[in-house]
Image (cartoon, rainbow, N blue to C red; front, top):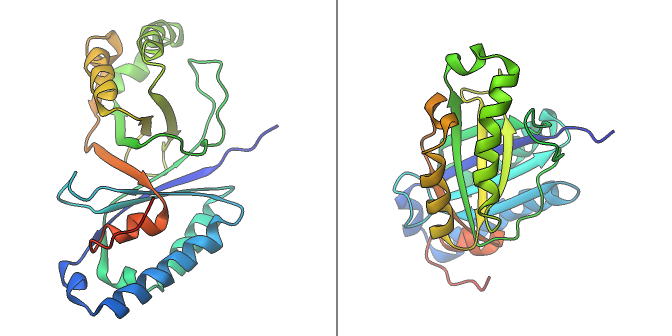
Amino acid sequence: MPSRHAVKFTFLKVDPAWRRLPDEERAEHKLEFMAACADFADGHLLRAYSTVGLRGDCDALIMTQAENMERIHEFHVVLNQSGLMKWCEIPYSYLAMTKESEYSDEERLELREGHSKYLFVYPFVKTREWYALPADERWRIMQEHITVGREFPMVDLNTTYSFGLDDQEFVVAFEADNPADFLDLVQKLRTTESSLYTKRDTPTFTCVAGSLERVLGTLDGEVVSS
C-alpha cells in the first residue's frame, strides 16, 4: 500500500538590503542555498516558484515533499545554514500531508511533478457546521464541487491535509498554464453549495514555476534561462 507523505510550503521574503551586497557574495549565498536543495531533491520532490511582482509580502515558494516530517525538518535545518537564509524571512509556512479523499475515488498519496507554468496556493478552513452534517450529505454536496472542477480539465488540483498539524485544515494547490482558467474555475466554485461552508481561504498566492536557479535569480534580478 502506498504511504502518505509530508508536504511543506515555505514562502520566503528577502531583505532588500541583500540586493545591495556585492555580486560575488550574493552568488555564493545562492550556491549554498542550491546545494542544500540539491541534497534534499536527491530522492525527494522539491519545486521552486517565484512570486516576485505578484505579491508584495513574499518573493519565492519552496515546496517540498518527503516520506516523513523528520526529513522535512532536517532539510530546513540545513537550508537555514545557507548565507541566503540569513537574509530571508518566512512570512508564510504551511505544513500538510497527503491523504485519500473522502469524496473522490482518485488516489493521490504523492504530489505529482510540476508540469504547468503557474501554481495557485491557499490555506483552507471549513466551518464547524460542515463537519456537523451527516457524511452522506457532505458527500452529496461535494459531488457538485467535483463536477464543476471537471469542467476545467486544464486546471490540475493537489489537496493536502493539515488537521492538527498546522493552523489550516487543508492546503490547496492548483496548477494551470493560463491564470484566466483558474480565475474562472474559482468564480464558478463560489456558486456551489459547498462554498457556503468555507470559513477561510486566504491568503492566496499566484506563483510562477521555474528552475531553482532561475527562481533565485529573480530575487536580485539576475537573468537566468528557464
